[in-house]
Amino acid sequence: MIEVSNLSKTYKTGKETVTALSNINLSIRKGDIFGIIGFSGAGKSTLIRCLNRLEEPDTGRIVIGDTVITDLDDKELRLARRKIGMIFQHFNLLDSQTVFQNVAFPLSVAGHPKPYIREKVRALLALVGLEDKENVYPSMLSGGQKQRVGIARALVNDPDVLLSDEATSSLDPQTTYSILELLQDINAKLNLTIVLITHELDVLQHVCDRMAVIEYGSIAETGTVDKLFLQPESHTARRFVSIIDYYRDKRSIIEGFGAGI
Amino acid sequence: MRDDLLDLLWEGLKETLYMVAWSSVFALLIGIALGVTLVVTERNGILAAPTLNKIIGTLINGVRSLPFIILIVLLLPVARFVVGTSLGPTAAIVSLSIGAAPFLGRIIENSLKEVSSGKIEAAKAMGATPWTIIFRVLIPEALPALVRGITIAVIAITEFTAVAGAIGAGGLGSLAIRFGYQRFRVDILIATVIVIIALVQLIQFSGDGVARSILRRRRQL
Image 1 (cartoon, rainbow over the protein chains, first blue to last red):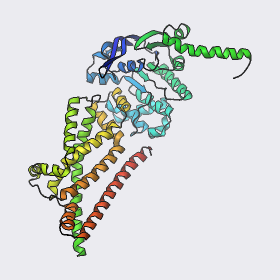
Image 2: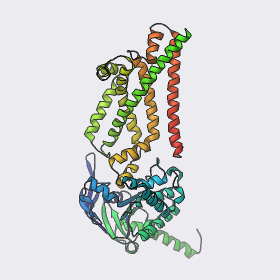
Image 3: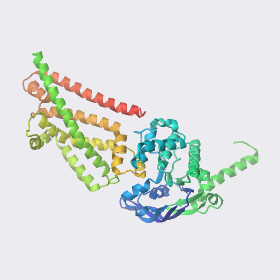
Image 4: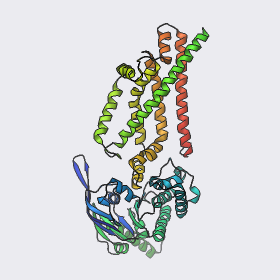
């Protein structure tokens, strides 16, 4: 479904050149929830933003479905982006528009007729459980509700792929869990391919089928999520997993003494 | 004599309102064009054109660094070319519009820059054209800040009209100078000042009201 080959990206800050991504190769299967995990600054955000070319890669090739994303001109890219939904850490809803108008935005950009927009938006709001919030402005919503609007907006054009840029990172654990459940739900219902980046192992563990670990701008390892936990190979993966091991060991010691915390 | 004072004030106020209203409209049109262009042509803007950005920025700084009274004098030939005369309120509108536009451009630029880059990025990711982003994201999202900024600018234009009065533009400013200063009519001077103060208060009050009602509708207040 998504093929990334030899993707590289550098930033110029003044006279210095910083390598954000170097020679990334990834293959993501249709219908998978694919997690990209890494510490801050590892390049995961740059990577996901290259997929819809919010960041222009320096070299490399990105194919999504039948479309070679890296070959598109501006106009073709705009059309292709309608089939690539995206959700964000800070939701990025428009405060000047109601929930309905926010979700309708991609459809009106695409020039769909009003009755179609109304029907479609209502269906999506029902899917994310916000039917009763149609005429509310975003400032009245909680973080979790805002992200639900973000998800409805990202899905309203029937995309093939959903990109999630740290979508749960500014939510509390309980809300995170409900958003992850929603993502799993739509993944199953719509057979949607989801690419998500995160720095939370929890997120990966809950929803992802396969994953890639990114380290200093390179893919350190890929595979199933089970493999990450059972046979972590990269430095990053071991560090993530060691945190879990640390607490498991600690708990077993405490339980061994028969004491509570 | 009281009647004569009221008549003079009324005439002056009408001329001032006429100049402020039209100058604001024209300055706003030019200012929006300048402000939007400055924002979108920035290095990381949605229509990045750093050279154009620098040229417009320098021009704006140039016009803004001139004292307004000198600017009016410099723009007299333009006024004569556009409206056929360099005297009177209509001629002043030409100078006032051109003089205030760069100021408005900067104010609008600053308001638009407050819109988070994330919102613009989200619109891009949805396949919006730069044009759509300008009119459906940038301007509506910045609207309360824009209204506040424009209020400041309209008040500045009101001040400018008073200055323009000194060189034959008419209006309350000219009244204050011709009668109050040159003919020692302190009553007219004070009355004029009171009317100008009231006018400025009214503009500020209306601007605040509009901004507040927008925010209240969006439940941001």
